[in-house]
Structures are given as C-alpha cells and as structure tokens.
Length: 156
Image (cartoon, rainbow, N blue to C red; front, top):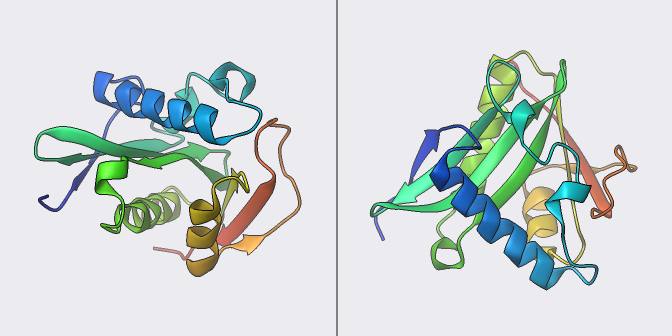
C-alpha cells in the first residue's frame, strides 16, 4: 500500500460518511452494548468543521481508509471518531491523525485536547497512553465511553 494521504474534508462528504459508517459498524460489533451514533453527542458532526474544528479522511490507492475529527469547544478541543480500516492498520496512520489534530488545535488556539474511548478498544487506550495522554475523570455524558484522556497542546 502506498503511503496514505490525509485530506481535510467535511464529515458529511461521501467518503467521510463511508468511513464513519464503517467505524460505527465496528463499534456496534465490539461494544457489548452495541452502538447507535444518535445517542452520542453531535451525531451530525457539525462541530468538526471550520472555523471550530476539522475533519480528515486518509486516502491510499484511491480508497478512503480512515478518518478523524477535531471538535472545537473554544479554548479546548476533542478528538473524535478516529478510525483506521483493518487493511491499513499497522501503518502508523492513527499516530499521523493524532499529530494532525494536535497541530490544528494549536493553530486554532486550543490549549488542551480531550478524548474518550471504551475499554473494549484496548489498542486505542494503548495508543493514547503511548502518545503521552493522561487519564482524567469523565468529562461528558456520552453513554459509550468509559476511559477519558487529556493532553496539553503545544503552542505553534
């Protein structure tokens, strides 16, 4: 596989929607409670667009193979919907998404990033710990996550 290209796009673009649907299906299969995006905060992902946030889709060989969003909350941001296709896992794409989110958050003047995940996704929990994220108490009322992280954003 060629090196994936990260492209900023709307979370409602067809390729983004396809990635998000694959992500939701994987969550539904892996979480004991299943998954319904309509029960999560901002199911339309409108806060992951400029000027408050951003959304990326990764492309390789003409196919969308992953996605990640930055949801803006003013002086802090939230990493949302990080997903990499099983065919592209192990290529370092999640780390590249996280670096893009951190850089964009700094550019937007955010001092801190937060994220949530579920312990049924141990590879995600491990990724965040390795990348220097610290566990924090719950910061939202989303019904699915049970692990919460925070990281300070370096100024640009």
